[in-house]
Image (cartoon, rainbow, N blue to C red; front, side, top):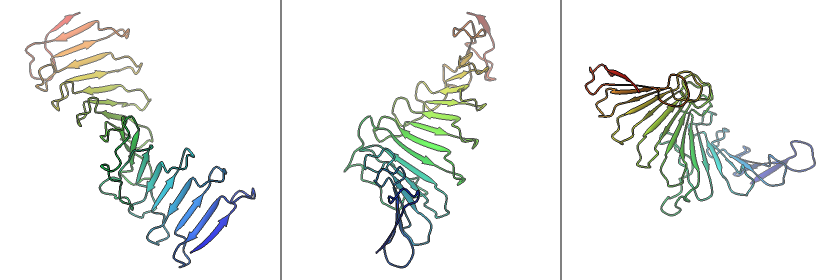
Length: 254
């Protein structure tokens, strides 16, 4: 094994170490002290000797424990999976891009209740995360999925499993990319069919239209409007016997 030390910023202290584990002249491991505190906080590994980093482990909070791992499973030089873990939690790479190391056994080391767990995916291989799966309560079940559907670097769609049954029951959309949700759908009874839709048409953060499908037939039968944006419904359009075109046919002022 051969090691070489580097002082990258010229302060007189070693902040990077390269290691040739098998003595073939190629570096397989690089340890880095990114913040100059004298401790390693990032390590890059080339496990297959192709001179391309396969995964990087990072200790982002300086507690001596790896909490973030980035993987390039296909060896194209672009990170395609990032796992972020808190103490006692475990994240898994996407099935189509398995990590070099085997994931921890959940039975042997269960997730800590209340701990945050997140796994990021770059589904199109452009080097940017477009989907993030989050287990907000640390129970081992993903309950929130954030998506950047248009590739602009900002989350525009969020799907949430609010009751922990493994099925999405709320989805919010930011259709104009201003950072404010302007459309949301809800499955309030857990039957897999959207029965409530909310709209913020003017982007002021106040819902101005709510559509209900109270009988779950896929046809909207009640619509509530807040036309003046005061946060209170001022018009209700409803029809017990809708025409089947997706909208109520009779109206009444509230």
